[in-house]
Image (cartoon, one colour):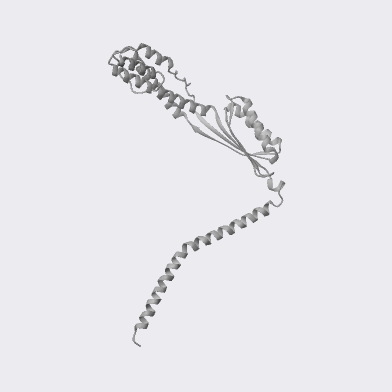
Length: 285
């Protein structure tokens, strides 16, 4: 009875874990209920349509220059546009604003966006920036081909799913020893867990293809000319002070390196001179 109870416990645990090697031997106990439970709790394989071309993950970067007083409003407007588009079209992944002075303002906004929504957003971004007297100073796009990774992940999923199905069949239909049954139940638990992990990894890869990374960097335009007249002088003074500090630091470093050697050399010279004077005094006149 204890062996029978132990077998039922392992069969129940097998329903919610990972994939592993199949075992042709089954158990001395028939466990149709345990196998049925494992089948009912296993997640179905996500179907992936056949790729018609490269599966690329895109990353866009935009550098915007605008009046310092308008940067915060621009960031809030673009962030609201993304939020209003819905999670299937756009999601805000990060936002920051740095204000060091009235004319020293910078910001950064990061998004995940679908290609269709992003094509419209790029036009709106240029129009919004131009409307406040700014411009898009730089833009770039990079891509990463995930085709091989996605194909490999799908192949592993199919193989792991077949392994899980064989283990479920062994638990349900093949009689054998209690120890064999427990081994098969443990293997089924591991197989189901591995299958779930592979499905999660594939979902992440597919999301990277479906949603592009977007980074927008905002900076104040013409801050020296429009705000602080003495800013160039201040910058020059700070630069001069920095050079003096670097020179002093170099001198201290040189002195610190040479001082022990100088002391050692002075001591050696003093000893040599002292010995010579002693010899000269001992010589007969």
